[in-house]
Each structure stands twice: as structure tokens, then as C-alpha cells.
Length: 64
Image (cartoon, rainbow, N blue to C red; front, top):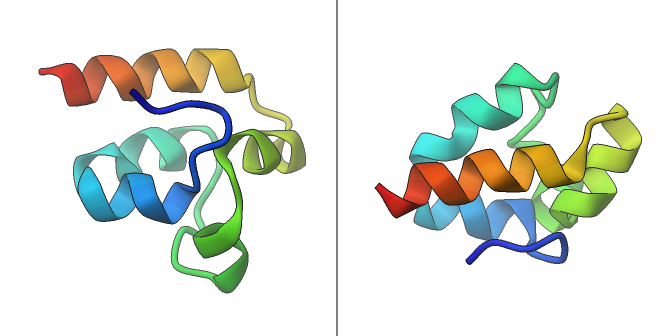
């Protein structure tokens, strides 16, 4: 299960199909150094996104 503390790079490395979910909330810099080291919670705070809603979508997508 992906949590608020999971690093974005870890999610994308294991589940590249989740990139579209990050793009959908305005996270277009997934390859930049900051994204490689940020947690999902940190990135959502910077982008003004609802972390819980994103986590729900990510976990639903990877459960398929």
C-alpha cells in the first residue's frame, strides 16, 4: 500500500502507470530531482492537492 510517506520515485519506479494520476493534479515535473526525493504528502502540499484523494486513486489503480 502506498502511503503519505512514500517517495514519489518509488511509486513511479514500481508502478509507472500511476504517472497519469500525478499529471492530473498538476505534478508535471516527475523527473526533476525534487520529485525523486519528495514524499507524496510533501508534493501534494507544494501543489495544493488533496493527498488523501490522490492516495485513494493510486492504491485503487495499483490494486487492479
